[in-house]
Length: 184
Image (cartoon, rainbow, N blue to C red; front, side):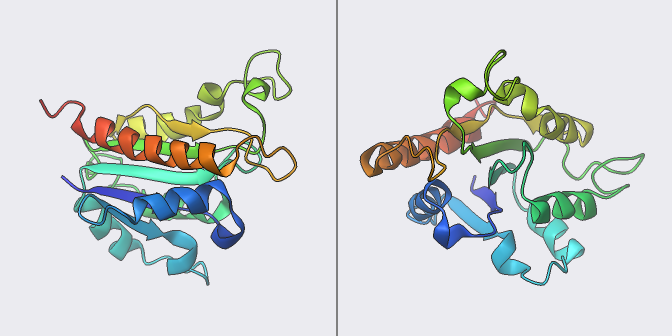
């Protein structure tokens, strides 16, 4: 089973972590298809039917994005609003995502310790990602554990190139592991 990675980063060429992750993903074309929303829709006019047809082809889907103001980038939010429509993703006839394994791969600018109770951001990453978990649950998908890396902001820059390379390989292992979960 091949994995679809829906990549949403408005400035991928300026990114350190998401760009490195993308480079690693592209090494495995037999296993992973990368679908870049900002590349596909620079005008933000989403072809909903095309996107729905793409999702139907895959049983394992990962949304990859940087955390923007404790949410996803705006084009991904628009994409979710339009593609996960009534009677397609939810509603009395909306079952197209039922039992599909759907996970998140998220980068944060802030340090890991910011994302805990009492930390700078007050909430854990688990809590911040609850709306995504509930969206997937509401669409009857199977919410997977998420993959993340912290401290990638140029102002913080906690990871050197070697650590980021190791993290990118761990991302591939996360994809393989979550793809196989429940298939046995």
